[in-house]
Length: 302
Length: 327
Image (cartoon, rainbow over all chains, first blue to last red; front, side, top):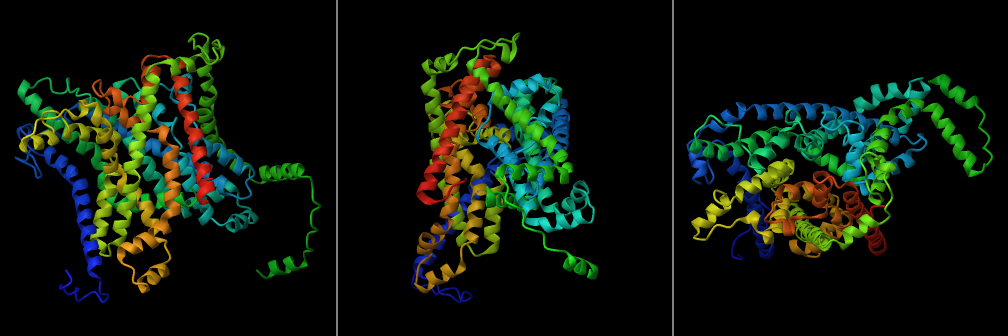
């Protein structure tokens, strides 16, 4: 090690100990990289391999006998298409409702002249550390006749306290109190100020809110599990659970022969995972910075 | 602009208001605020109603725990039974199993899952090459976006008794297959390590940000003193991110009893139930599946209260010891 010359490009000579240390760091990080990446590649590869290759365990890294039979079957299965449509509906409308409500509470709470802001903030944050529990909440949703309706997935968990904290911190930092006062003197009402000044100035935080709520809504299954009974309302995640985790693929491929069906049902699981995760993972590299921003804005005043 | 200045100059300074009793001052402030911001009060009303209806009304409903629920009489008309539901729970042989399973699972998760993101961040912080660092960050962050259902699906496919990747690999190496998900002894490890796989990259972000905020002159001073990279980590990096570490630790310890229902429930099966049944899954199964509302509410309330006490305790302790706290 010591005999080796330091690379010519680096002006600062690193000691042998430091170089050894960095070699260890690079090795560990490479192992971590592979450990995270491998299962993801394996699943995608399996989803586009032939049914026989998947069931006989011949797929190790790359696809074997490429075929799109899994996806073909998926898109011919009514339950999955319904689930997909439902998930898109819940994600679109749920996100809209959630973001609107979050801004509606976070902005007034960011104004220093808004009397009662601390009391309301206490009311909001206390729900983070204490809750009535599963059954009492269920009873409320039931008494409002929301059980087994689409509203059950849009309303009872519409506002996340964490998002309120993030949005409020952002408004406090980026909408100066003087600006609001100046607008007030010019005769601009609070509502108009929100619409024509606050919202246009808050695009970065709106992006954070939209993305976090949308991913949360797309990935959620718990509310659907407890509040929904009719299969035609199920989001994709619940359909997924029934097919993969409960291994219930009957009714999906009734026309097929036994062996073929068994092989295909394995393949279908991989294809389903890909289809359910793809929308999120495709946009992820472009939106990662918004998530990081969201985390950091919140942690300043968490 | 000019006129404004003149107007300002001609204005007499306002006399200082006489100091009023605090209560009247507040009432005045409130009245002024209502008059000025009545639109904002309207705006805040719907979200506030949301919190009252869906968060606070359930807290009131939690009186169910002290009643014997009767569908016809409703929550408020049902007879009081005092602490009977709690007593039933404490006397139930499953009580200690649930407590043990809940604490062991989150304790394991805390012990293994807490240090790993810190180590990951410290290692990433050492890397100067932009590309490798970016790729590792991008890839390790990605599993965070996988839903719980998909995560458990992946676990089940990989660990499936016959065709799962893990068993195919074991067979290749000459070992017998293992029914991983049917082994009660393996449940916790499966839960914890898949969780680390999924969230370590995400959790590391907060430490990376803290590391980026460390005063660069400290590194220069360390360099002048001839510190090695490892010494810099120990003497500059770690003390620099200690406040962040403490806050995250408080949050984690405070939530030990609140470990999530979602993933445990999906991983659960009759074979591994002796280790996988935790308080949250028990509440779901006796409450919603067996419709034993009062008893399930009591169990849930017990859990919420313990959790709240724990959070306050840990926070107070941290305040006393390190002056870092979340309140």
